[in-house]
Image (cartoon, rainbow, N blue to C red; front, side, top):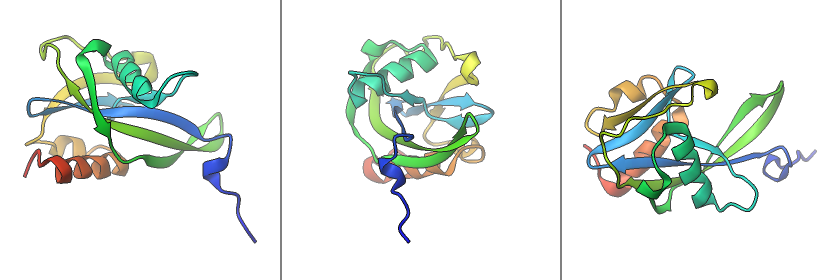
Length: 151
């Protein structure tokens, strides 16, 4: 008996997000009481890179013009419940350099469950790792293996 390929189902939620860095810091959001990375759905007629930059800007208040996409990172997949239905979420991730003012105030989107945005030092990510999703740890490990950002 063959099972339908969930990757081809119309119910797949396609989204994009970013590992945003500046100096020796990475931007995290506290969403629904867990540390996460900014991400969201792709809109019609939008490239993946445009979606990632727009979503980061919308969820944090950072200016799109201060976000420079450097390259694509591995895609992650996970299931989430939407309106009582289990749906596969595909997230296309990008490595993004922040070129703006590091003292700029954040504007977290409270109605999306984002209560805090914070630059975290790459030397002290233990707070994040103790309260995040496995996919975020995987992504951060990939970034560190490739760019040697921390020990």
